[in-house]
Each structure stands twice: as C-alpha cells, then as structure tokens.
Amino acid sequence: MVEKALDRMFHVINIINRLLLVTIFVIMWIVIFGRYFLSKTPVWGEELVLFSMLWVGMLSAAEALRNDLHIKITVMDRHLSDKVKNILEIIYDIIIIVICSALLYHGVQLTIQNVDISYMGLKISEAFAYAAMPVGYALFIIVKVEKYYRKFRKTEIAREAE
Image (cartoon, rainbow, N blue to C red; front, side, top):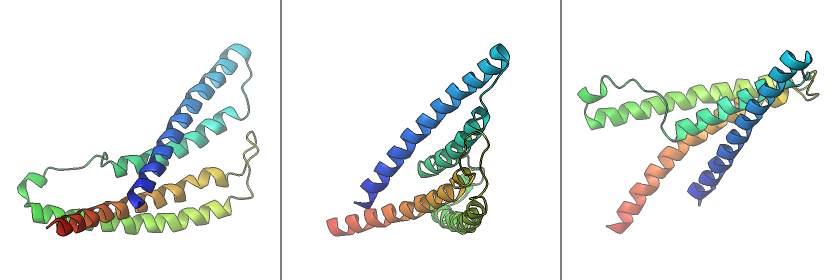
C-alpha cells in the first residue's frame, strides 16, 4: 500500500516536472521573441522560468535519488566486500538523512521569512519558490526511508515464504 502510494506520488511528480520543462521552454521563447523582435518582454517571463527551474531541480533530484541515478564515485567499490559496501551505503544514507533534515528545517524557516515578499511580475509570494527546498529535502528523506522500508518488506516476505 505504501509502495503504491509513493509510486503514484512520484508519477505525479514526473508529470509536474514535464509540465514545468514545457513551461520553461515556451516562456523562454516568448521572452526571447519579445526581447529581440518586439523590444518588449513580459515582466513575469524570467521570474516564471526561474521559479520553474528551481522546482524542476528539486523534484527531479528527488526522482533521481529514488531511482539511484546520482553520480557516484565507485573507484574503491571493486576492492571492498559486499558486507563493507552495504555498511558504507547505510552510513551514507544516514548522513544524507541528517543533512536533508537540517536543510529541511532551514528551508522551512527561509520559506516562512519570504512569505511577505512578492515577485513583481508574477504577483505571488516568493515563498512559493522557496518552498521547493523544503519539499525537495522532505522528498529526499522519504526516498531514503522508502529504500529501507522496501528492503525490510522484501526480507519479511522472504521469511514468510520459508
């Protein structure tokens, strides 16, 4: 049940990322066309592109983390036993969770601080852009917890089958 809910959530995140990428592409061309051919650009254009880029960056990083697509330095891996690799992986994941927890806390604080500041062109609070950080870091934590939940479930199912 939890796995299906997370799969659905990340499917929605994938759709949101695609829509944001299309938004970035279309708005950039509108801004470029306006700047070079009409000598006038929409005030909200660059703000919307930056807003969208921030959200795409955080959401796609969470997707990459979930699918284990981040760059890793694996020079030493071939010299280590599987047991040592597993222990190091757990240590790395704990470090990631601790750092993301701190960044989540500070991201929430930063978002709250920017509630009263608005984008001039978009006429929305900058907190909507800053909210990408705590949302992203929360997703990173969820992804890491999910990883061990799935491992635990797989172990439990294997034990029940015996």
